[in-house]
Image (cartoon, rainbow, N blue to C red; front, top):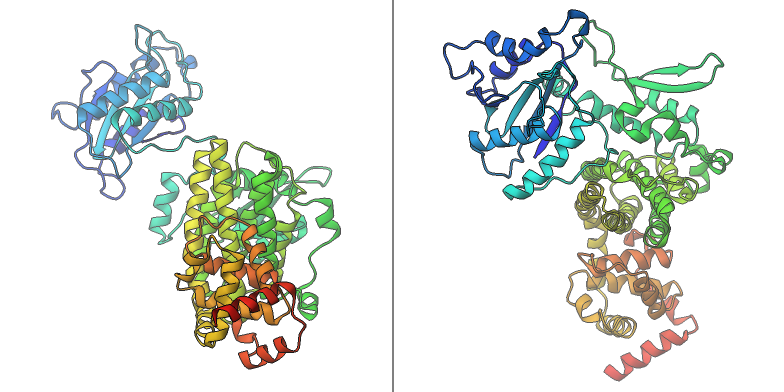
Length: 574
């Protein structure tokens, strides 16, 4: 149940006309009063002899009783209270009780013989009511409505529990501002899927992901086509900025600008500057052409480094102090934004949804200490400067590798928030992880399919050998892995790792020692990517030599102790 306290207004009759009217999209049905301050107020919806003017004059009476100079300029208080779509439809009597509780909790009409304001609750839909009040008490004084929004939320949590309704996670003041109803209606009229505020928030988030300076940040905003206004002090210092969509105009035809802080708390210029550590500024990201020439700036290389940075960040979130963990969680949001920006078409939608969902999880009251998150921020820079990735070959396979590790990082963030009691952030991180899992399925299907086919083509002695290696290295997980469809892909990867000169038993042990397999849908899939990253194998299996070459290379190398044990076990089977 969500109460939404709106800014004070100045015209009671105007608000009543809207509530009792058809609505802007004919969505109001049967508007009528369910409760009021005296229980006897005229109802223009059900009483043919009552008018809107009658109700307005009754509510405004204490205001008009004051001397004109003493009347508040904005005296209309308004809140809507909306039930969750999953909850049952309430009766008028139940909504009336909720209205009385909300006005008491917010100080509008505290009850128990205390002077209160005049108010009325109007219902024009099954799932919500509107409460209108005038902000002058019967004794002529202002009500104690300080932080009425937070007080209404607290009362709503109690009502949910008593009615057995879906319980909304309590807010903590760190969420981005929601679009107003006017912004939503405007987007609908213009045929937009999202409001201007939401589009700008996503664009600014992507622009700041991995940026190292104000110049780079504003260049990215301009490159994205946004209109920019900068607020400059008389000294010439930059104090802030506003952005607008070129085609989002007000009634006078002027662009509608939003300051960064109104898009999200961490998008104000001072908060963005916290990300730009002196180290990052002294070591800017290489020019794209230079990075490509050295091989460091390819999309695939950036994704491999992202997977490594995500692994290190997960350990920090699990074991680091609060402020450092918060910095890594915030930087993880930048990585998701950068990955979504540079992803191939078939994964772009789910990655964008993941980044949008995780935006809520990237902020909490645990203030991030920046500087410790350089590896993740560098990964975001690498992704942006590496450019868009193809959906196939090494790009596609390394994307699957990066997403696989990011799933564990985002899951660790969800657990961290849950332990801290950050209910909204934990839920947001969990939603982001689900979107990442969907993106992973899209990204991994082709490269894992190639590995699966290679594993199926392994000769019987070779497959038996990999089975023995698996049972020796992972006795507690071996049977589960062998029963998974992904086992053949893992068997091919073990063969590739051994051919590259690695001890497969030690490598598997190290991969499992990196834990977090409990939440994996497929343990074999996770081990494929961990082994390929640890052994520095190409993520794209089609780049690996065929098995004839692999066997010839393996035969020419000295046998390591671990490899010798595996060969003895195969001999025993035979």
